[in-house]
Length: 235
Image (spheres, rainbow, N blue to C red):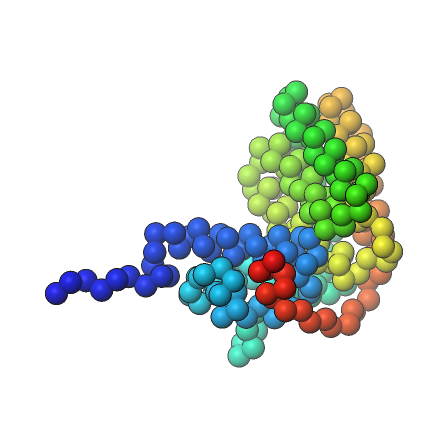
């Protein structure tokens, strides 16, 4: 008897589909296109990405493990809504690890890495000049990830990716003013300290920068919002 075709969830590209879903949802969160509390329906996401419910569920479970999605029994998955206490913990964690990350980055500094950081700063400035708020938010998070990649410390990089995604949700919920959450001036100062191999200055710049971001937050419980997935993931 001929073997039956394997279901889509068992296809060789299953892991790629899971990654695409994870990356798509995470990018939408980082760019503030997916709002905290948005329901992440398995069927709808499956239609958007051409994936089975099994693969969608796997992706959502991975995102839940990273703290940017909540899975509620008998209700489904939702974009996480960090509390004010969560926000304080996230920024406390970032202040603990990012100064050490920048130390490692200085140890690994090279002309190529400085060029990459300078190129990234130019992209941030261009996004600000054209008033592209979504790109500015995404690039701000990517700057911190890039410094972590430069450090060569894979454990810190993994931690920071999760913290950046959580920070994006926190900033969306609690930012006090309609101003850049992560200014290019601060980033420029960090890059200059890295270029000079000045660990003390780089650590101080990073700590001041993270403190300023947290100070811009109004840490009180927000109101709920709703959004259609197809409007942001299917765009």
